[in-house]
Length: 219
Picture 1 (cartoon, one colour):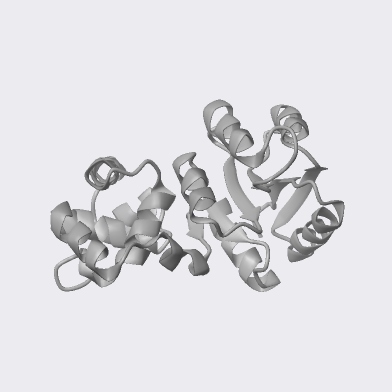
Picture 2: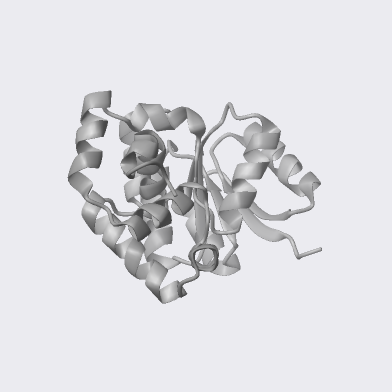
């Protein structure tokens, strides 16, 4: 069995932090190395511990979750950050995705689903709460027009489909029989063509656009 992931919890609700700590510790896949109530305390502890993964609330007093997320992506980019929040507001989701969140999950998730999603994020696979895909979508006409304008190549469509399924670059390369470097090029092209900033935004775009994003389906 592989070593558990070091996990840091940042949320201003102590009861929730305690429940999350018990849930993740009981799974055997995570070791909670810190539990703090503010972004400032989380940043200070992260500098000391360099955890594998951070669970981060979005709305907190003082340094809020978005500013904390931006700090992690700038100063500790190797740490995966999962936003866990009660907010399903479109502007909050988009702001977190653009800041580089590795996951955006809702606090009303079932415990088993939350564990599975956070575990995927710990392994480098972006996760967006399924309830949010439609929230981010425009009208069917807008989605169709967007897909028609993009002009993705076959390989780019295949890469996008695998990103939407949560595959890492290494797994995408293995699946498509190409090098990791080539996958990085395709991801760069996708971000540029779709005018997006993060891998999770790509996954969200793929989920909301559906199979029509490619000619005749994903594959």
